[in-house]
Length: 171
Image (cartoon, rainbow, N blue to C red; front, side, top):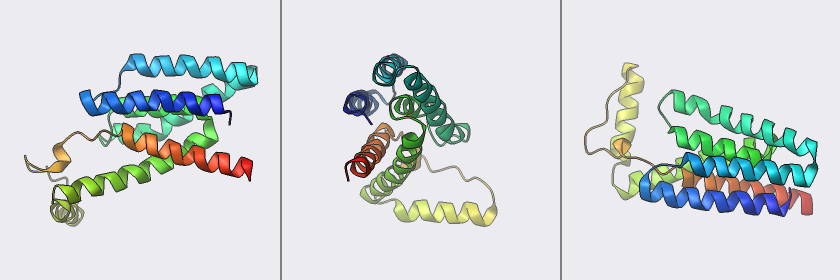
């Protein structure tokens, strides 16, 4: 993977993290600017095959997070952000970035629950839903009702993916 592509995606992800933390949303303008930058860089680095990598990475990144949005487990901005990441990283690397992002999101979620002293309450609710085979609304003061800036997890997952990609190429 080209250093220009990885540096560029992390600039956009850094901005996304800042806006997700401050406004609890990821701007469509930011995602579109990232997509435009990615197609320019991909085509500059690899010619027409770069455009193919851009498009397939975008599609894979979008489709891999789409089910989480469909079942209300993730916001639309997070899905679009992963599509943007895919346009920079390509289809194979975005699969790894998504997998590592889901792991990072899980760890961050558990840390939030521990910090708010709600892990046991969360586990009780999950056990009750599994036993009843029905959804149970979280309480009004429950951490599950609060917005989670998932751009942080996408940033960490992408960093890990790029690190392993660069390590395998270099060694």
